[in-house]
Each structure stands twice: as C-alpha cells, then as structure tokens.
Length: 395
Ligand SMILES: Cc1ncc(COP(=O)(O)O)c(C=O)c1O
Image (cartoon, rainbow, N blue to C red; front, side, top):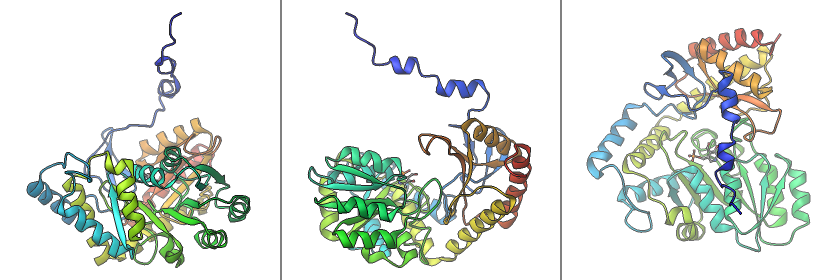
C-alpha cells in the first residue's frame, strides 16, 4: 500500500492562485519608503490606511536614533532566551518602565504579541480550568487556548448576558479572555459589563489590549483606562508592534502571576529574546507617549474625521470606536476589486476575508495614526467616495 502524501493538501491548494488569475490578489505586496502615513507601492504613492502605527512613531527621529544606538552598544541580537543568555539590562529597564506606566506590579515581555498570548494562555490554562473566550478574539488567543489543557467556552461577541449564563453553568476555576479593542472592527469590549459578571462568578479577567495600549484612555494605558475600570482587570496583555513602533509583546499583572508566567510560558523559555534595537525603540516610544499625550488626541481626531466622513458618505462602518474603521462589504471578490481600485487611486487599505471574519462579512479595514493630516484624510475620503460610487457601495 502506498502511503498518502502529507503534502497532498499543498499540491491541491488553489485558493490564492484563483484570485491571482483574476488579477486581484492583494496580499504580500512589497511596500517601500519609510514606514509612515504615506508609502510607495508598485511605483506609486499611497496614503497608508492599513497600518497599526497608531502614534506614527516608526519613523520618529528619536525612536530611530535610540534603536541605532542600541545596535552600536549591544549588537544586533541576543541569540538566546530571556531564561538563559537573552536578558540584557535594557530588557529589565523596559519591563520596569512599562509596569510603572501601566500601574501594574510587574511586566514580562515576549518576542511577539502572538507569542505572548500563546505563552500566557498556555501557561495558565491547566486541565481543570475553564477559559471563557469572546467569539471574535484574535487568532493568537484561539491558538493560546489550543496550547492550554483547559476546556474552552466561547461566548457570543461582546454579549455579557450570554457570558453570565455560561458561567452560571460551570464550577471550575475560570478566566474570561477578551480583546480590549477588537482588531478587525475597532469596537470595544464591554469591560464594565464583563468585570461585573466576573466578580459575580469569581472569574479572573485577561484583556488583550494589542490595539488598546498606546491608543485608548487619556494617557494611553488602554481600554480599561478608557472605561475607568483598570482595577478589575487581572491580566493585561499587549504588543509593541503597533503604537510602540517596534515588535514584541508583554503581559502585565501582579508580581506572583507574572513570576509564574515568566517561568512557565513556553514561548518565553524556549524562544530568543527581543533584539536590543527593538527594546530601545519600545522605550523611546513610551517616553514620547508619556511626554506628548497629545499624540493620542491627534490620532483619535484623524480617526473620527475619517469615521464621520465615511459614515456620511453612506458606508457601513460597523461599531468602530477606536482608530480602526471597517468598511463592511460582504463579498470577498468584490472586496478585492474595491481594494485594487483604491490602491490604484492612492489609498492602501487591508482586505479582510474569512477566516479572519465570518463568511459573507468581508471588509476593508482602515486604521489611522497621529501623523495623518486632515488633508490626507480628506483626500482619502474623496477617493473612497469615487470608488464607492463606481462599485455601487454607496448611492
Ligand atoms: C488583538 C491582537 N492580539 C495579538 C496580536 C499579535 O500581535 P503581534 O503582531 O505583535 O504578534 C494582534 C496582531 O494583530 C492583535 O490584533
């Protein structure tokens, strides 16, 4: 008997090719120029509305200078895990500064935001534990629950009554896991409601604030700061690949919980630590955020200008309440066609199709940064209007 080939699925994989044949494939496009509010793609310039560079710090002179200095002082990589040879003095300095900024006892950092969720959930979720997870959370949380030994109970998106009902039926130690700002639609978790249900049932709460820290709240401490309920959140997780203009992730909480995570999270113990340049850029971005909270105001005002403009034009922008504004379209191929027309006219957006969103809910995800000027937003709105009419999305 010949053994079936494990690569058969690859040989039969045609999904991407089908879209390429239609001339509509929008992914893995090389951008050039400095990462900022305007970039180059295929030789033309685009207003970048597809980036998570919320504070616009990726090309900030201080961030770039500190990053370059760190390379000169420490070299380019740590070549080992934080657990062994990969902890530099600047890793500890960064964790202390973040803990102080977030008003948490302690912070531990990871090499990506994705790895943070894998490591944290994998370490905390033991056999008799229960993880209550919003249906719309980021893929890294779903994969984190797969790395745990716990039973996973999914509740309807942001439906606190459903969560309450599900918790009522279960007895074991429980943790609720939600995004703070949902990454595709830019809607906010109902944290006050979730915390009250958590208190009622004695469950812990973990918030993935990848799009919340450096974005939401008067000082950028995140979604719980926005709602004024930070004390109720037991564990705050985040990333450096968005507002912090770098790469990496963190978990912030009490000394005992972070100590446990630091020693038990497999993605911390068995993966090399953040390189010095990335650490230095996180600290520079944090310093800028603390000295210039007006960047948050500027970012939200750019987002609000775009959200209002798109809504007034008749686009469906969902429940966006953050600098992520979706344009909900529905059909994937139509979404690719509109993406392409926008690109040709000078606006870069992110086409989002299944499995990132449920079938039939394809969208263009747009996002805004402190360095988008009113002129850029208005120019983009003019392009959205022309393209939206051409494709019959708006009247
Ligand atoms: C909610 C959420 N969590 C985690 C991540 C993973 O972060 P990173 O890209 O830094 O690995 C993302 C990335 O988009 C995200 O949106």
